[in-house]
Amino acid sequence: MKRILIPILSLFILGCGDDPLPKPKGYLRLEYPQAVYKKAITPLPFSFEKNELAEPITKVKSLGAIKGINIKYPALKATIYLTYKTVTEDNLDSLLRDAQNLTQKHTLKADEISQNLFENKDTKVYGMLYEVGGDAASQSQFYLTDSINHFLSGSLYFYAKPNYDSIYPASEYLKKDIKRIMESVRWKK
Image (cartoon, rainbow, N blue to C red; front, side, top):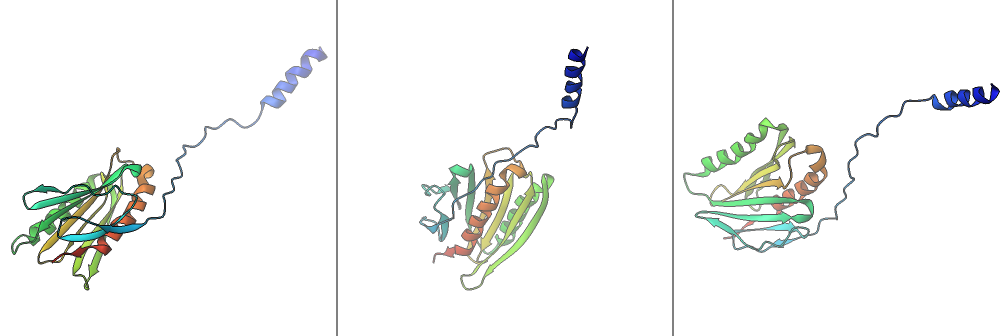
C-alpha cells in the first residue's frame, strides 16, 4: 500500500502549481543604421539631401506639368513619393487644398493626425508635415512651397498592410529622413 500511496501523493504535490500561461506576443527589436545624408542629384527644379540607405534616384516620372521622384528603401519595404508641380498665379490654393485633402483621407483609419508647420525664410521654403498615427496607409505626408513658383508634396508608404505596431520603428526612422528632406530642399533658379 505504501508503494502505491507514495507515488500518487508525490504526483499530487509535484503536479500542483500555477497554471501555465501562454507567452505574450513578441515583436522584433529593429535597429537601423545611423543615417548618412548626401545631396540628391535630380533634373527637377529643386535639390535635397537623402539618406544613403535609400536606393539612388534613377528616373523622374513626368505626367505633363507634374513630375515625381520615388525614394525607395528596400530594406525597410517603404517608399517616399515626391511630386513636384509648378505654381501659377491661380493654382496655389488648389495645390494646398489637394495636399491637405490627401492627408484627411487617412482620418478613417488614423488614430490621430498631428500637424507641424515648417518655415525657412532664408531659403524661402514653407510647408506642413502631417504625422499620421494608427493603421493608416501613409504614416507621413508633407508639402513645401515658395508660394510663387514651386510646390512639392510627399508621402510615405510601406509595402505592407498597415499595422501601426509593426511598422512603427521604420516609420519613426523615415520621419527623420522626411524632416531632413524638408530642411534641405533648395529651389533652383
